[in-house]
Amino acid sequence: MTLQQQARYWLFGLVAVIALVWLLSSILLPFVAGMAVAYFLDPPTDKLEERGLSRSLSTGIVVVSFFILMILTVLLVVPILQSQIFGFAERLPGYVTGLRETTFPLVVDLAARLGIDVNGSAGDAMKKFSGDIIGFGFDLIRKAWSGGLALFNVLSLLVITPVVAFYLLRDFDHLVTALDKWLPRQHAQTVRRLLSDIDSVMAGFIRGQGTVCLILASFYGLSLTFAGLEFGLIIGLFSGLVSFVPFVGALLGLILSMLTALTQFLPGGDYLHIGIIAAVFVVGQVMEGYFLTPRLLGNRIGLHPVWVMFALLAGGALFGFVGVFIAVPAAAAIGVMVRFLLDQYLGSRLYLGVDGRPPDEPAP
Image 1 (spheres, rainbow, N blue to C red):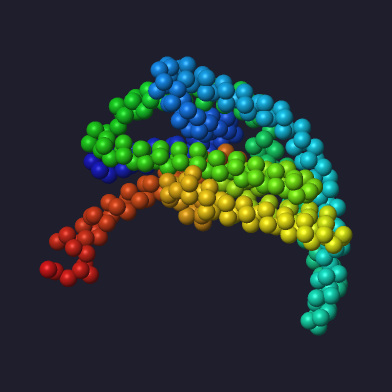
Image 2 (image 1 turned 30 degrees about the horizontal axis):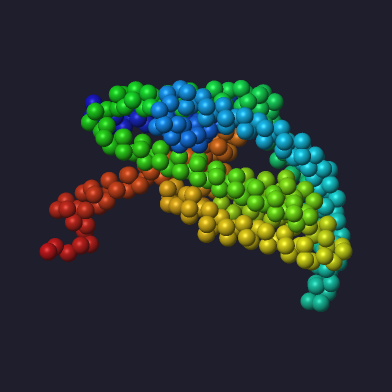
């Protein structure tokens, strides 16, 4: 088989995989979640196996313990979150209205000092803006529910995800051995190295970034609750869990927190609590940027924040809710391939020239 035929073969395989993911995206969520859980639980499973337990027993203990802990957490937290979610959704229009009534006189007064008359136009603009915010929020919730969190998908997550995680954890080494036998012998060593790099990057993201998100969610939720912010727990948990998108989780959390805090504390002139809530997000960003991310992730992912945001938007646009989950790991895998191709290019005659030197490098 010539090089061109091999390239066509692998390109066809890639297109077929993308088409299958697109066609089956509505049922892939529990399988993607199971793969993520398997990556997350692989280290403790390996440690139990090193202590002399069989792979099946180690996998069973780790998976059962993990999902029991998850179920207990859900049973304890969901009733609180449910009341906060519905309460926040019910009071959001009031928050926006209160913020408009509180800040609008300040805007008019500032404009008057600058000699600008914005009384009518600013009022109309703020009414339209607040209406757009409320409509966008409810439309986003509706789309998320119908696109990825429908009842069937929730039930499939509860039933299928543990099964997928168990079998992937137990049989992963056997799967790798079987796949290794299918590799083209001429390029087997190169493919093994690339797959090893991709596996390392994906594991680093799932374990490292997942841990960062959980720590930030706990920090924001508890800090905002202790600061006296209404619905601080749900806002904080949301901010932390969305932190896998660089800067977006903290920015959305800050906007929601300040919207609530200004409505709650500004009428009484309580600027101290407003400052404390803003400081919570400053501390969270410092903790993430200078402590959590360097220690838990380091340079294992090697993805620029802009590339991560683009991958998330592209994944969501192409594959919906499932695409958001697979976007960053897929982008990390593409990054590994791009770095490999760049290394090949830098060592090729296309870059070095016929005589092995770049055209702009003088002969010795």
